[in-house]
Amino acid sequence: MLHYFDAIKSRGSADGYNSESPERLHIDYAKDAYRASNKRDYIIQMTVWLGRQEAVVGFRAYLDWLSEQDEGSDTSSVDGGESDIDNEEMAPIAPQVTSNIKVTHLISKRPGIPHLDVASIVSDFSAPRFLQSLETFIRRAYPPPQNPLLPNAFDRFDLYKKLSIRLPDLSAAGRHNAWDRIRATPLVPGRTSLEGLRVAQVRAIFTLPNHLRAPLLANELAYIEWFNPLRAPDPDSGLHSVSRASQTRATAAAVIPLTDIKSSCHLIPKYGTHFRGGWTRDTALEECKTFVLNKYISIAAFYELQLHHL
Image (cartoon, helix red, strand yellow):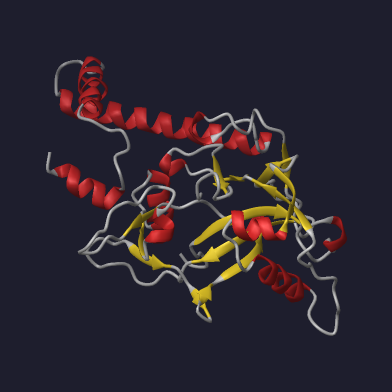
């Protein structure tokens, strides 16, 4: 069983695997292959037979992929068999520019929390710099001498509890027609939810009220709190460590378009030598100071965070 240790370190987590899985392959790779031979010099014949079977499977996968490209995106299929996109009306997020790119970001047609005031967003979503970050986002799109209309404390926003992101097909990890979900829900009651990428916590998903909408501004936005940029991974584990970023002694926050969010990620608290205890899944992100970015959470995550960059 020692080979599993090296296999997991080099190829990612063995999601749901047990010893029955490789035992089953004995039928495919030994019994069936032996039956296909003439029982003389059978090892050579078995090797040829297996190579041909793999070629057929590979070509069939290519034909399936080719047919998917012709048919276009199919938003009725959800990663992991979940049906929350099927059972909820979803609206595509309009791209900033006209293009032929498939729709990759969806939110519900009706906001989960409509007409919420700024004070409630700040308190319920733990988003203290929401208004300042939104102002910065608008001013960046309309720099001086332009004088855009800015939000104020009396504006109300429609907030959404979930963003669905269409992930690119990844045949190497067996991922097809997969969707990722980013959730942002109130704290009371509720739960908190490589290159060019950065870890952030999504606090709120919202749309601009009508009087703040402008051609250069995305209407569907997210209030996020940044973690520090990824640096060199630990030489032993190969994992990146991240901690919350700060700006002038306050949490580094920003408002960004929903289309800037690429996928969810899994953070493991870095406990250190002393652990006080009492953490829950709702409070761990607030209590812990440093986290480890877990690339072993799934085969797809491992491929994208490591193998894809080798």
